[in-house]
Length: 65
Length: 153
Image 1 (tube, rainbow over the protein chains, first blue to last red):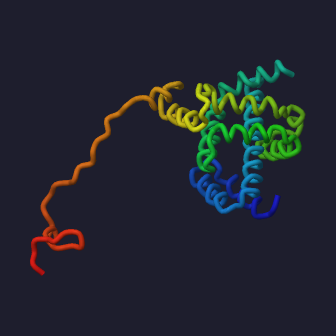
Image 2 (cartoon, rainbow over the protein chains, first blue to last red):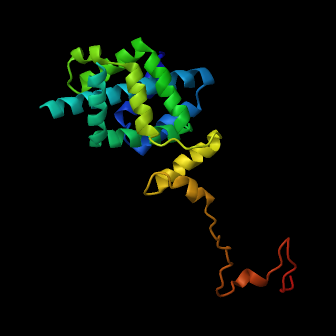
Image 3 (cartoon, chains in turn yellow, blue):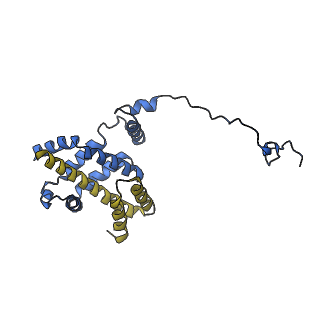
């Protein structure tokens, strides 16, 4: 992953719960080539699944005490 | 393993954090200009990239203070299945992807799942915009390129 893509993802990670964060991400994506956009989507999807996994783990931990 | 997975799935449905995950995922897809189906496909493809997914899990787990022992429990296939179930609990019964997305969005606007299709079918009377009536301005009778006007130049 190149540095600029990492920067876009890093910026999004800081404010991923906000509309502004998503808007900035969308703006950055709109300037990317199809290939780079595909890489960005792939990383976002992986992070999203990872977050879901962590939520599952936390839910399991909370329930089991 | 399967039992553990089913147990986790049942628990996660109850989690309020999941609600925000679903909301964020839908907002993310919309912001990127992707349909929910396209985004779910991205998640499914991500679930097959074990190395990258594991790296992402390490990052997420570390930030939440979970030990790296959780990595052994990462099951991409099950995660993708859970994600689809959460993001698209009642897939629209249409083959046209555009219509399916329209129904999903209409569902989101409705209070109950499944009302999207009926919302789209419903005919609604549209109000015709009306010209506002008020006191005439000074220039109302002046000549323009489109109208001769009433005032002599």
